[in-house]
Length: 271
Image 1: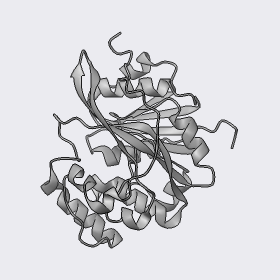
Image 2 (image 1 turned 90 degrees about the vertical axis):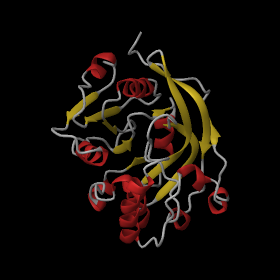
Image 3 (image 1 turned 30 degrees about the vertical axis):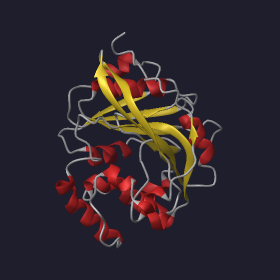
């Protein structure tokens, strides 16, 4: 592996033009430059504009023939990976400028590393997202505890391709919980660690729908499926924010490095 290993970033997307452009801007600002950016368009409107907007980035667009949702799209992205490392990112999340450089330092001696995040709420103003609220999400790395409540966010995590070779693709059957499933499978067989830095911004808009808030009835069958697969027992289907108030979760809160100045990331889209 060279001193500048190639990092393949897989981004599933569906009809999020503003968000995708802001993510591309955040990738353009990275201090680490050797990137393969794989954008998998899940049968939404064309995203070809992003290559014209950011010609400096090595962006490859894969168009899904039909809308199969984000887990299938990620698996399709895996087929295009050329890198020494794989990084995942949702199309509405953002990576702070030193994120990839830091993750490459943190993964030494490990197979998968995930960062802490700052969760931000926003409103749309002038074709961009303006931040209305933010809070830190940082919890101790504790696999038994993470069988009760997962504190793994996939956006910004980095791992070696050997994980996919050994574990296979992401499980489309558990749908909402594909990331929790991936974490548990990885932690069972590989060296996994948390990086104590909040270098990813995780989008959460109160006005929209999100897997953090509503849809609990829809999610229950997938949670039961995940539990049966990993022997997790009876898991609570609670609103994400209520779960954060649970004593066993609060006890796991950890110190982390805060590096975001709170400024929104403006893309070139409407310059």
